[in-house]
Length: 476
Image (tube, rainbow, N blue to C red; front, side):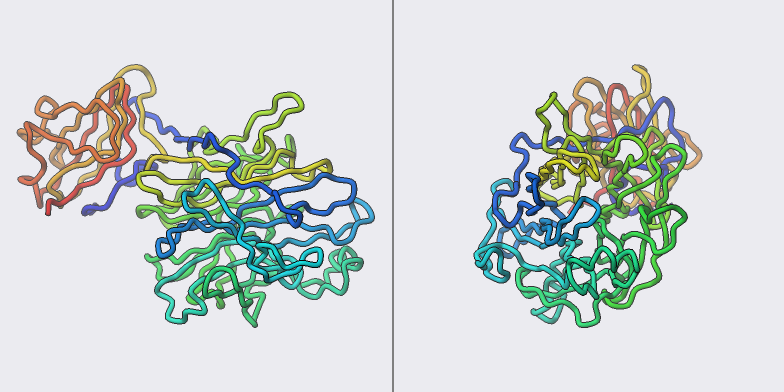
C-alpha cells in the first residue's frame, strides 16, 4: 500500500498487518473545569412552559473565525406558544448567536432582528417559518458571492395554520417538515432559500453537513425517510453538489445486538483521511438517557466502533437532589482545532429525554490532545507489538504520537519479508519514554533517509505505552 507522508491514525487495521497483546482504547476528552461555559441567562431562553421552570439552550454549531479572531456558536432555545396539556401543546425553536474571544467567556450580542416581549434587544438570528432547528453553520471563503459566505442547515415546518391546530395537523399529516438552507454575509442576517425545504421529511436531530474535499461534494447526515420501527432514530447520509439538489438519504448506521433500540443522531467530521462520528446512543427502552460513542469510517458509509462500545463522552453525576448539568443527556459537536488540542463543545441536559419536569440545559467544553481518539495499548502488563503492512518509504523521518511516561516504546524497520533491515533493529532504536504528539524516532541518531523508495514495514514495541498515530515526514 502507499501512505506517502499522510498521518496514520491507528483506529482501525487499515495500515496494520498484525498485533500482539494489544487492545484499542477510546480516549475521552477532558471536561473543562469552567463548565458549563454557556448558559441560558436571558428571558427568551426560558421556554415559557406554563407551571415549569424550563430554561436552556442547545448548542448546534460552532466554529473559529480567524478573520475576526472569534469563536462563534449558534444554538437553539425552545418556546411554548400553546399549552393545554403535555399531550396538547405546540412549541417552536429559535436560533441564537454567541461569540467569544477565548472560547470560554461568551457574549450574546444584541442583533436587533426579532421581537420578544415587545423588544428586539436580543441575540435571536432566525425563527423560521415555524420551527428553526439549527444544524451546521459553514463559513466558506471559496464562496464567490459575499452574501452567501455563511451557509446554515436547519429544519423547519411549513403549512402551520395556527398554534392551536398544529397537533391535529401533525396527526393528520398535513404539515410539510423538511431540511432547509439559508445564506448570510456575516452569520447573523440570514436569508432562507426560496426553494425550502430542500429535503422533505422530519429530521429533528443534530443534522450535520460539510464540504468533502475528497468527493468535491457536500455530505449531509440526517434521519432516514425509510425505517422499520416506530420512529426514524437512525443515521442516514446524502450528497449534493450545491446544497440544493440532494441524493436520496441512505441509511448508514442502525443499532445492532449490543445497542439500545434507537440512536438519536450522529454529528460527523472529516479528519486526517477518516470520518469520525459522535454517535448519540439513546436508551429509550431503559434509562431514557443519551451519551455518545465514537464511530469511524474510511468512506463515510461503512461505520465501525470498538467492540467494548466505550462511551467517548460520559454523562455527569447525580448527587441526590444535586445534578450536574450534563447528568441526563449529552450531545457533543464536531471539534474546533485550537493549537495542539481539539475542543469539543457539547450540550448537557440535567434531565432524561421526555422528562415532563423542570428542564435545564447548557453548553460545556471538553478537550482532547490532537489525533488521540483511539490508542493501541498492551492488554496485559507485558510487552505488546504492532507490525504494519508493507509500503514504500517516502519520507526522511518517522514521527509518532505516543505516551510512554511510565514505560517505553521502540520501533524496528522491517523488509517486506519481515526481516529486520540492518541498522534499523530494536537495539539501534533510541527508546521513547515520555509524552509527545510528534516525536522523531531515531536509529543510532539517524532517520529513514537511506531507505527512501524501499518497501518497508514498521514494528512497534509497546511496554506500558500508548500509540495513537505515526507519520513519515520530509525534511525541508
